[in-house]
Length: 183
Image 1 (cartoon, one colour):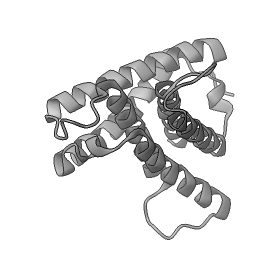
Image 2 (cartoon, helix red, strand yellow):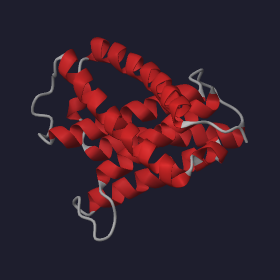
Image 3 (cartoon, helix red, strand yellow):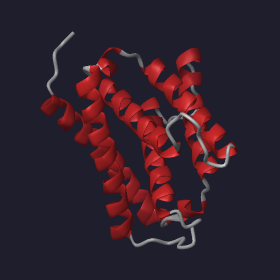
């Protein structure tokens, strides 16, 4: 396996995120921050739908809608960021419309935290994700979504596990990894 250093990984991470951020910005200009009405369970369901579609395509090799797998992973990444922003604002969507510059600052803040988490985990795990399959990334994302749904059902309480935010960060990073591997 080709050895990749952290500088290369950082650049690949930034390139993937920049593409996703561009999509997020365009959709924000088109739709505003209509996603502010989503509750955590709704965001989890949006990610679930995208991950299930990827899995169906992987298993069946057939798709009827032109959106490719890469586009679905980009959507998963952006929904994970939306989930994190919603958790951070914790205002029940009271301010439905956020200014674009504030929205992008919130987006960038969550990406910065996710990237730091990725860097820390890469240090400890030695970039094991580079040897994983896209199928595994999808399965891990689906498992994280089921965990989020269970935590929501438990009214946000966990006994020995990470919270909803940690699961969204992991989903975000799994999507980045899948997109890096697809390039």
